[in-house]
Image (tube, rainbow, N blue to C red; front, side, top):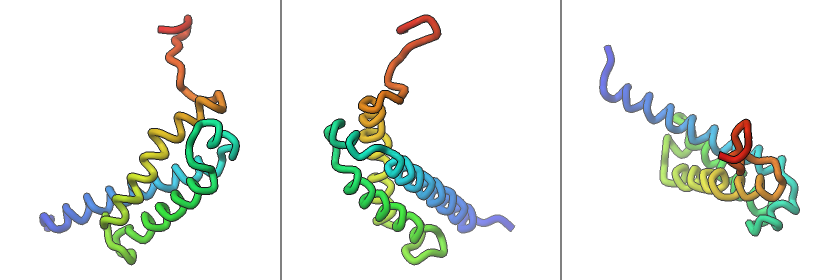
Length: 112
C-alpha cells in the first residue's frame, strides 16, 4: 500500500541524491581546472574552492537518507548553495578565461 509518508521519503531521497550529484560534479570540475585561471577570473583561489566544495560534498554524502545528518538538513542546503554558486558564477568565469566555454552565442553561420 502506498502512503503519503513513503511518497515524501522518495522525494527526499531524490532531492538528496540530486544535490549530492551537483556537489560531486562541482568538486570534480574544480579539481580539473588550472590554478592560475581562478586568479585570472578574479575568483577565490583554486585551493579555497577545492576546500569549500570538498566540505560541501562530504556534507552532501552525510546528508543522504540513512546518513548521519539526515536528508536535506540545513547544512546540506548550504552545501548545495556553495556548489550552485560554483556552477553559475565561478565555472563560467573560468571557461571565459580558459577559452573553452559556451560563452559565445554563435550559430553555424556566425553570431546570432
